[in-house]
Image (cartoon, rainbow, N blue to C red; front, side, top):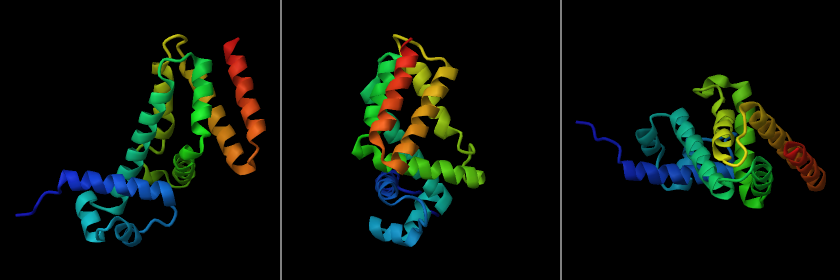
Length: 182
C-alpha cells in the first residue's frame, strides 16, 4: 500500500522552494540543485508534487499568495489615488524586488510558453484586477481604471528595473495619481 504525502512536510518544502525561487528565479531551475538546497532529494520532491511542473506551479501560487497577503496589509481601504501611491511605494521597496523579478520572469515565460500555465498566465493580471476592484471603499475602481492602474505600474516598474531612473518613473506615477484624482 502506497503512503500518502505528508502535508506538513509538503508545506515546509513548498515554503522553502518558494524562497529558493524568489532568490534564484525560474530560469534554469533544476530539481537536483533545488533538492540539495532544500536538504531533500529529487525523489521526495517528485513524491510530494508529482512532477517538476506541478512543483513550479505550486511555488508560483505560493509566491502570488504571499505577495497578495503582504500587499493587502499595506493598502487596505485606501482611495484609488492612495492605493496607487501606496502600491508604488511598497512595490519599489528593495525587499519586494525578488517578487517583482520573479513575476516579470513569469510574464515573459507565459508569453513564450503559455502551455506551462494552466490559465495561460491570466492569473498574473486578474489577481490584481480583483484586488483593485474590491479593495477601495472610498472610491470604487472600475475594471477599466484598474486595468489602467495595473498596466501603468507594471510598465513603470519594468522601466525602473531596466533604466534605474527612479526619479522619472516616480514622477510618472505621481502624474497618473493626479489624473485619477481629477
